Length: 330
Image (cartoon, rainbow, N blue to C red):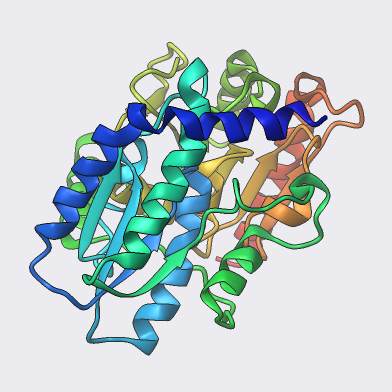
């Protein structure tokens, strides 16, 4: 007997616990003024939602007069709230991954799907969530997540991976540069946090790397990007950007010389722009599924599959080669 399947089936018996959340979503859907929306439903994760904006963009091109409604977890509303192609964002409160009640996320997903499919407000609906519907081994798949999304939406993708920002984001970027004496292309952005500890390069290594970059290239500045909860290097040589919305972060990354990051949402965001990327990965998950969609992506993986074994000097050598190429092609 497969205990995982039994547990998932038993979770449906807990529907009464999620009834309030479902009713709240139904109430928000009924308040929609327009009855001709195209709905996208994707609950998690940050990188997946960033990738899904490419699907939204393609559907919007085909249906320029239609309104777009995106339904996601309330924890990830910040990812798309500045996207001008999305007219309405509706959220559902999900159960945290470290909670026993996380088993309720599966029936919650299926109930939302039923509600959206049967709502008169949505003329079309795209359910982009891979799990819990996908039963294969995603870690060993040869397809990228964006290909799964494209199949669900029944579209062919072009080579672009757009992420849109708005006028307020651009205004914030100008003010940020003025406050910190920055200008476009004269700083490097670093995303120093990942979703799990095994994917996270030690902060002390990032600090050493940042100091090495500045000592060898004093004209450059370093910006560390993360959430309010993240730990940042305590050094006045670095600029620390804490808890800003994704549109503002996108403007800063887009205008940087290049981006250094880990396996997670920020590197997918950075891949939307024409800047070089350096990714420090542990190598435990399939690259074909979730690698950044950028021709400018440089990857560093330790043979041991322990990210702590990646040496600072090895990362700096990649950076040095990028800087040399940049000086040859000003």
